[in-house]
Length: 422
Image 1 (cartoon, rainbow, N blue to C red):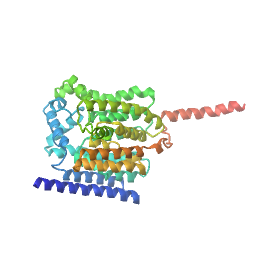
Image 2: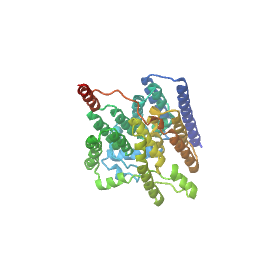
Image 3: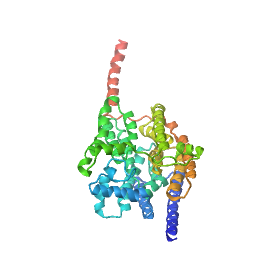
Image 4: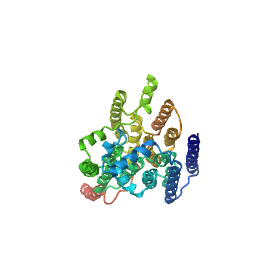
């Protein structure tokens, strides 16, 4: 009984924080607030620390227990991919190395995990303002108080915000048009892949923004850190590389509670969900095919869009086509949705926030969560940035190849004109 009362009190406190965040978003948008970036960073860090405090003892099991086991295995020199139970850790060991070092601080595990995530959210707040196409200070504040970000970072403590930092930094690098920009962006994507696999999606945006002649350098920069981490695992955690490769490449999401895979179950009346199973494996393969078929369409429709807008479209389409789902997935496009979003973007953010809150805090049935996911996907389709298919003209960087080509063209033009008149 006491446990039920404590949980109810925790959920009530958390809902009040989320409602305050949503209300601040609405008021800031309507009144066009423009607080300083430093203020927004402070708000972001403060709110996430408050949420983490409220969540003490209620952090979801994957972070509270599974990630803790992964950290201990790594600190003991054991391979976290093999020592952990299936689907507890299917990624490269960048974060386990960080956690194993932080264990020496002897802090409570939930604090150990979340401190790095919350610090990354401070950086993400700055990056949202950096990438925003307009009203940068307002966008930073909107991100700082967003309920989805508060839940994923503060309540859950998932490491996706750290991976997102790498992707956003890569997009910032692409704003420079010099020779090193593509390689730097690729290296940051590689760091994201070392943290969690899905930031590989950002590689599409990096390659799209880079001249084909430089693709080998970009690919090499992207793969350098992941490959280095992988091949050195036998040295640090006594790994068996062939088995680790199978585990990493065999990663699967939780199938049956999101989008079209949920609709299939509603129609058939068979609510079979999970990571494995004949139906789950088949549907995940179908999802890969759907995404691969949709990606060329995205490349064509947004061929002239800014890299960040294009990346937002890619992430949106991934959420529409995926069969597997973790609640943190709805966070992936959030920073870009706020940075580049329009009024229609809130048709995604609103339902996604309700879905995240219901999964983390509520007791909804499987069918209700599937229904909420369908509403969120409809919001995604409405929020696709069709009105930003053409990037606004940017001033040319004097050090870029384009600037050099333009200068050469301008020096040839007078000579051509003189020859024509003589």
